[in-house]
Length: 212
Image 1 (cartoon, rainbow, N blue to C red):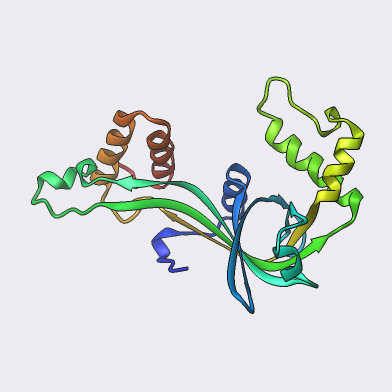
Image 2: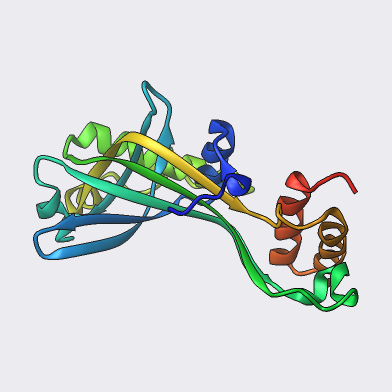
């Protein structure tokens, strides 16, 4: 990934937070037939040296056979992203030398992918994934709310996957290269737009903005 120093995000807590908030990974592997990409929610688990990512896929997914005894992979997680109009820059009125861009947050995780077929491991993962996502619900649903025979059938139709993380690389392209005046005017424009995506973008930009 092209990574100018101004946009580099290396803080482990920030990388982990993005993965926790946006756990749907684009999981990319290379095999003899070319490149494949699947979209899988993954759970980050701490550990040495870099931790693991765990999830599950359908047993019928061709990725199961391609993983075999293990395969290198890239998991990509996307955070806030959106178009940035030059109309938000204060410097637009000072000669017009402005251009649009696209701001975004992303984390790349490189590692070794393997299948896990242990039913106890897989059931524990289902509990962990579900409990994590249900915690914002007024009445959280639990895996054990489903009938035991239904859970058993589900476990037979999926395969666990785990990535031993080799490295993590983060990028936060959030207008850090703009002067303070443009950052402040952009924040005002995003707050003025008022939609959820604009407000999320404003919060991310503000965290990294120059004092204004």
